[in-house]
Length: 236
View 1 (cartoon, one colour):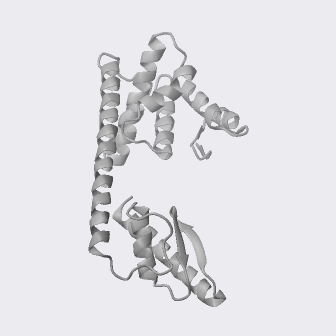
View 2: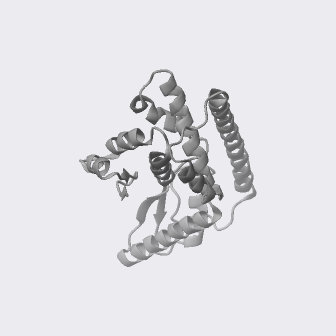
View 3: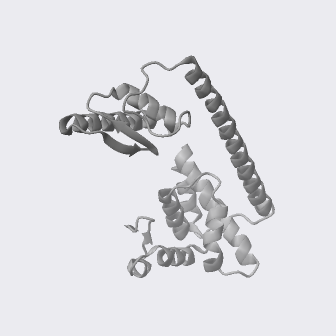
């Protein structure tokens, strides 16, 4: 989550706490609600800032149990030391998870690169169209779509050269080819471009439309020459 997203999310939590305090004051009762996994209690005279402070501490695992309705105004030295110990352990776990993720991603990339090391280039039926696709997608986002589409097509070619049908390998190859973190929209762009430029593009388009449809929209798209995107909108 980015800093901006975190700030927006925290603002929503603070606003919710203030709303809870308002309702508690109006009804003269203790309001109770779970906020991001933390049970929060407030009365009409609770301090919203202190409630939020301890909600965040509980969310990070610094404290256990319910928060509120009257947190200590000032954290003790013991509280701060305990928070620091928990945060250090949280950071150690985050680093471990990140290292494991990077190791797994690196192994995945190396496996794919080895598979494609001696594989043929992408087989095109419209080289001019493919080149235009590459020329207009030179930024990070668009470039990732180009790289992904080419890698996916080549992986499918490898499988088909070994006697397999496109329909049987396309889905697994699409995940295998994803080294960039492809979104549904990026995936749809890759399908559309491969459908227009790749040797097996028409076969891929038919497979994709049938796979994506909920009703019969894939059949209609296949008849019209369109491509369903993951949101089931037909791209003409």
